[in-house]
Amino acid sequence: MKSNTITGTFFIVAGLGPLIVYLILGGLEILSTLQMELIASWILLSVPIAFMRTKDAMPTGIGKEMAQIGLLIIVISTAGGMVADSFASVGNAGGREAVGRLVWASLFLGLAFTGFGYYLQEFFNKILSGLLGLLGCIGFLAIGIGGVGDDAYGEMVWPLFMLVMLVLGVTTLRRAE
Image (cartoon, rainbow, N blue to C red; front, side, top):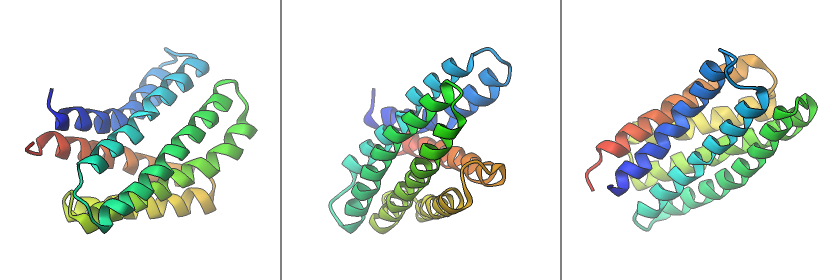
């Protein structure tokens, strides 16, 4: 299997995973809340793996350094996100909210650094890289300041997150080795 195929697949899983777990399996009540949050946490691991693989493929430069900062923030946020998911899995909304607001805002901060790193390094298309950076900034502000419990903000940033992950996945799959 080609390296781009593996990386692109991780991006696509990051984009489609939440949609499948929360909207389809959770919406149809096929899974319990515990099962749904556990599966969502494992799928969440695809996010830092995809970004790690792209960062490793980047040539040296200031953009790569920014992407490395973003990746570190994404890795830390993913670990915290798993804690927030574990609170949600047992019905502890207060714990989920307390941890979730911080880590999800941080995840988007990491996406901002990574997107701007890609933009500077011209690793992906400039528009896609800029969109990732902009999404990261908006998500950081919306969740960090607006609050993760406010559905209006979540409805705005999470679908965009999934869409950008899918586009990154397709772009990576189509990239020549």
